[in-house]
Image (cartoon, rainbow, N blue to C red; front, side):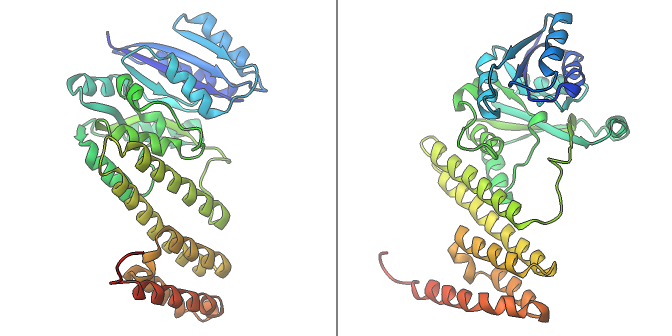
Length: 343
């Protein structure tokens, strides 16, 4: 029988832990093992984990005497895996019924697939899990060439999947290594890019996981500081991918550049929304960030399209007028550099 190893990092999520583990142990069509890694929780997580392990010998527990953080915990889980397939599942998330069988069936037939992902049902209340039955999806599986996955992800500029849905081929994971401690906020994005560089990607039109949303991880209204930090974290992920994968993938730096360009465009539209919300100072900060990400953006049609859109709003004129001088000077400098040889 096909084997899948699942490691579950847990920090103060004892109240969700049993439901999470049950969602794994109830998977059909495969043999599973579970490792709960308690990262020095301050609640009753460790006691609950040990209670679950005492009831089922497929479950083991690894307690940390001190908190090591999520990246170190993820990598510890990866080192534990011995099965052909693996899953990193947060203690507050759930594996959807049948998810493992669907994913491993595809990877058994197609050995060049590095990982398989699918739909994730986001929920806050248990009643919302009824969506698993009311909208199950077609179950259709398709293959995406690694190069196409990389291109689409870099052009999109965002992480294209939920980690809870991704069943990974262990040999592919060993080939690319673990999560990067330098990327605590976007290690998942960089990981999928690295895996896409060594294999193809399977996509299943079915619920593969349920992702629990909390007040601390739900998307809130516009906030410039949070947005700017997010843009910079994603930029680091694309740049890291470009550096690490360049030796085996000649196009990696170019792909990383597409990610940078996509972020620059996204920042421009965020600036427009900031002006619409009467947040002129934040809009200026965002436009400066767009130029920082891609200096050539000041000569693009999008840049001036957004600028024109802002200029027609009288209440924004004062803030935009200060920016306009900087933008014109930047555009002139960019154009004056065209056609010159050398730096």
